[in-house]
Amino acid sequence: MGEWTDKAKGKVKEVAGTASGDRELEAEGKRDSAKGAIKGKIEDAKRAIKDAVDSDKPRRGEP
Image (cartoon, rainbow, N blue to C red):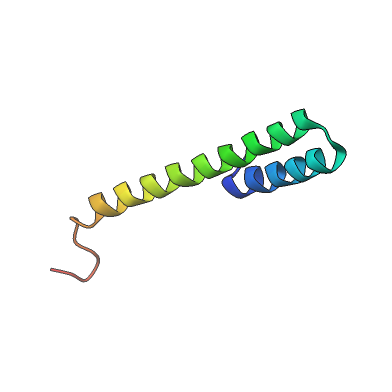
């Protein structure tokens, strides 16, 4: 699943686990949220690397 989906799903599970007193569900929600955050950091790193590599190439219309 995507970054935002994991974060949202995790938050729902975390809140539901807290409200119901289900510590296992709460922990699962925290894991899902963390997984979404990690996916976001990986995408940021991939974008930064791509931008660094692509910045050396001339763009259309540039000499």
